[in-house]
Length: 117
Image (cartoon, rainbow, N blue to C red; front, side):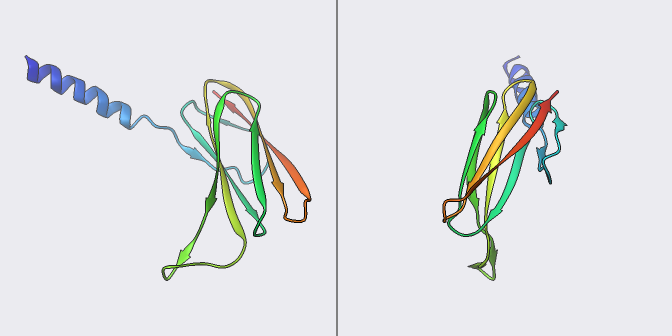
């Protein structure tokens, strides 16, 4: 009986592992819809030294991460890439305000809107 209960518990855990959502990458600022459990990744490309900040309108986990590329084992030169990752908590409409501030102090804010169904 203990083995049976253990097997049932393990199967229920395995089914929840595959329940993760999709990774959604918007190519523009057009509002879109996602499902609960999906993650939104907003790619940011800017000159070296640019600062990226993100604010949110609703409860969600938002992180900004630097993305580096390698070719033949070495970092490739060029524009810097960063990524804003958003993990919404709950359903509803979300707005993410992404501000890119250049080294000379100029800044630009873009708004990404989406709905979690």
